[in-house]
Amino acid sequence: MGREVKRITCIVCPNGCEIEVVLESGRVVEVRGAGCRRGVEYAIEEATSPKRIVMSVVKCIDGDLPTVSVKTSRPVPKERIWDVMKVLSEVEARAPVEVGQVLVRNVLGLGIDVVATRRCRKVS
Amino acid sequence: MVSAAPERIDVDVLVIGGGPAGLAAAARCAKLGLSTMIVEVGDRLGGIPLQCVHPGFGIHYFGEDLTGTEFIERLIDRVEELGVPYLTRAYVTELIYLDVDRKLARVLAPGRAIEIEAKAIIYAAGARERHVYEINIVGDRPSGIYTAGEAQAMMDLYGLMPGRKVLIVGSGDVGLIMARRFALEGAEVVGVVEIMPWPGGLTRNVVQCLQDFGIPLLLSHAVIAVKGRERVEAAIVAEVDKNLKPVPGTEREIPCDTIVIAAGLVPNTELLERLGVAMDPATAGPRVNELLETSVPGVFAAGNALAINDLVDNVAEQGELAAEGARIFIENSGIPTARWIPVARGKGIRLVVPQLVSGERRVKLLARVSKPFRRACVEIRELGIRTCRPRLMPAEMVSIEISPGSIPRDVEKLTLEVVEHG
View 1 (cartoon, rainbow over the protein chains, first blue to last red):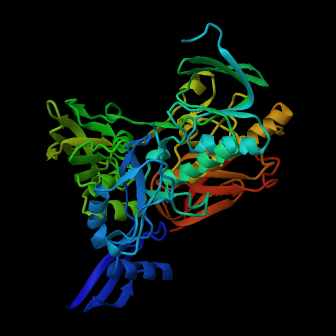
View 2 (view 1 turned 180 degrees about the horizontal axis):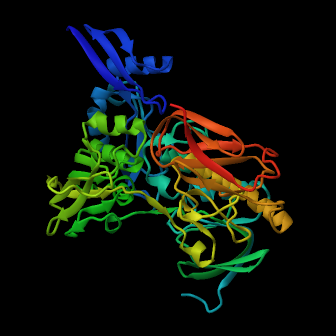
């Protein structure tokens, strides 16, 4: 791998700095255009190992709604988002479900749980 | 069956709407020792955040980044723990001003007709979405056209996909977030069309909702027509000029099966208008004083029924402020104030709430600028108080505080304006 420049729009604050991260063989050698330290940290993370919280809904059986909303307990590496979504498409929760209840423990071995973010009340 | 004589309920405060503004208002009223009742039209408490599965809620109010669902469940818990009574599937048909201390609400609920008499009313009925017929889109009217909120309810409450090849109209945060929701659930999002030359939503959402998924953002473009017999087949899109008029010859067809309209919200104010409340054309909501009281004594407004907010945190805060207002109103049969000073919109300011201040209490003005500014301040001209930002964006409201006693006696109005120092 040679020299590579990644352009990152900073989202730490509303300034929206356009930051350039220069990588050599995958290692950060220079960060340009950041207005603050937090921006530098954000840009390095985005350029080397971007992560996102994944949120969706999964089926809820016997619930007051047919779905319960979920999120990952921590950000997931960006390249694994689709794998997590695939797992979620097959999850079936059973009412009652409480907010914060773990619906998938250690999803894909990432050390991250999938937790409920909405109540699903049982209806008989 | 409905009995001949309506049921009768007496309370200190009636809260209309069980979303974030209404729940926060009701919880604060209960804590202040006021007997309170919530009337909610939906089949459970919570309102729109129940279908907001994305984060960005509660950073200021709870000091945590929560999803809309988590945020609203906490407020519901608070109201349930305080034992605030509420009606769901209950619709207010009319508000009647009896006298300064008594207002009557006529309410219909399944099998029941109820008259609720209250000393104060907190109106927190939220907003409605602008639909396709309000944004100059002509052509066919096949199935497959939804508002963002309708699509969100289908997906995130009922688990139904509205379509597979989706065009989003409007790049406010709602449009951006729906673009990501569709993409995450496996739909192809063919574009987000924005009539203005800048995105309507936060940079954060442009990055994480569009760039992450490679979704094109078409700035200075408009959907001018819909094509399709049974189902949407394509949108006709054109570039717009400086006056936002389509440029002839730039029309092109974008194939899609679904068009999602995210063209903004309008406060739900019908009941207030029928009550004769004075309106502000800038917010499309009622004119209010610093305790969020409308021009009808003892009738308060909060949340998106007052003005379209960008943060739920501000909505909940408005609910609590209206509750404080209701307490002061009930204790004094009015809001004790020497005078009300109007807040005028100056250069670069699209809207501001509240519209009337006394100078006697601490007030937080919330303002929205009319276009993006770099290195600029929002300033109260007569007081020299300013809030400065490297960037002022219409997507983000700016707050500016006035301390008690800081308005000189000879000042008869305040003017909020943008001052550039680039």
